[in-house]
Amino acid sequence: MKTSFQRTQWLTCQASAEAQKKRESKPQVSVFKDSPNVIIHIKISFNNTLFTLTNFQGQVLTWTSAGSCGFKGARKGTPFAAKKVVEIFVKKSHDFLVRCQQIKICVCGVGPGRENALRGLGRALNDIFKQEKRKTKKKNNKITLIREVTKLPHNGCRPPKKRRL
Image 1 (tube, rainbow, N blue to C red):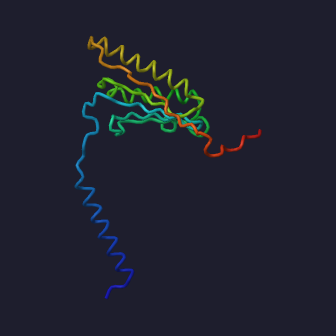
Image 2 (cartoon, rainbow, N blue to C red; image 1 turned 180 degrees about the vertical axis):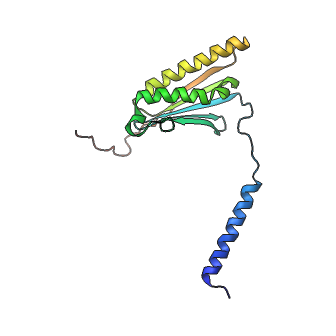
Image 3 (cartoon, one colour; image 1 turned 135 degrees about the vertical axis):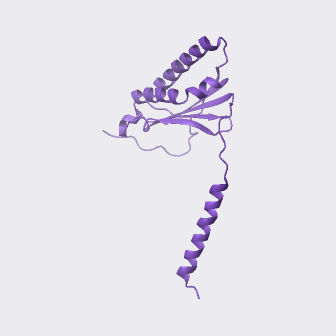
């Protein structure tokens, strides 16, 4: 007769074996199948800057943050960090940006690096488009939408108290 400990041990082994079968049977599918449209999500807070490139279905193609670029602590929220994040993001997502036809940009949050991030992204995309136009002799990339999606309260929750220095 099995004790309760042996019974639970046997059940966990069964559950892990079933989970392993599910993981093995899942086919690997390429996320980016020459999708002509991408969305650049920019989240800028006081503590960090995040750039995410997705297709229109919302599947993440590539991402970059100030923390992944080597900044730590309070330096992640600085305008200089936002500028560096843009540079690294454009390098990582260059192949996706070259192949796409429509680019939508969604900006969320207010932070010190917001202006630098948007200006840097605009310059970098402009440089990419100019290089590709010289190579292919046709204009195929364009920014169709820049949307502000920062959430603003309609006098909902009480904000945190002001800092006294």
